[in-house]
Image (cartoon, rainbow, N blue to C red; front, side, top):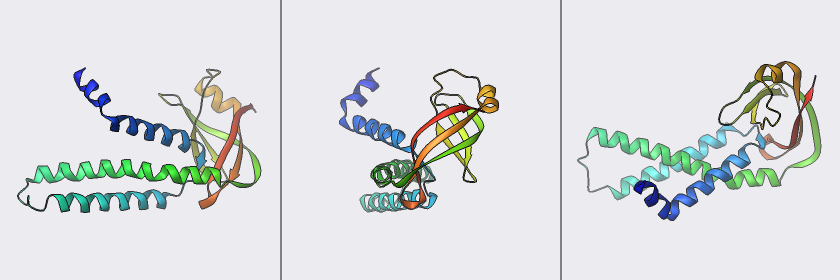
Length: 172
């Protein structure tokens, strides 16, 4: 309990929670985000953090192997976090720069997984896609897969991404 109070007193924890919330809210609306951007953001973040870490620890050359492993793992976790931070403004740009006509597609649902966050899996333009789904009607998995299709309203955007404006389930 005392550890939680210490974490909440630090303002950085609120910043981290805000970044996570912003990232999750945006990620659900964007389909076909290019993997090369994820890898590029991660590598840039990782190498900058690696450089800063090595610059700060120049005097301490006698570190154990286990220390080095945990250090690299910490840099990887921070690299992933900074990748998410770098994607937030890009996701805003992708959403704001969506252009052209609004497209409407009806897609077959391949799978539905109901867990902490429910996900629908479907095929759009020949590519497997997934998105978070609010199962407000409390439909069963087999019922969704066998009796429903998903109707997507989306616009195209930069990097050949698709920004979902709205979606709903329709009966077959």
